[in-house]
Length: 124
Image (cartoon, rainbow, N blue to C red; front, side, top):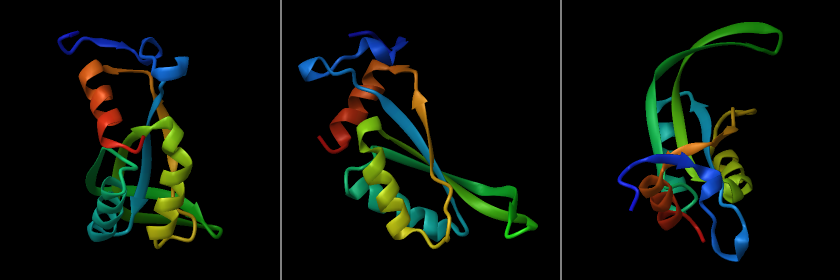
């Protein structure tokens, strides 16, 4: 056991020699209830091991030619990279926005225990 030491994700290999990669997907919603519903759906479907909800946050953006300034709730979704397409589709199916923010960044380092936990709690 590595005792919580951070290591490069590239060091963790799964069966068949395929390198396992992990991502954090973010999306925002208009209300806490919408964020909670999306989080619950993703975790129950085993598409995410964890969804953290924070907010309200202030978002300033251009939409339909107008600068908007709104409060939103931010979802931080931890999952496996190979589940991204399913996560995106699930968010879109649950999300009230016409064009929701759905972006992913690769997790390049993490504790072995945490990354193993993501494996255990998400779809195989």
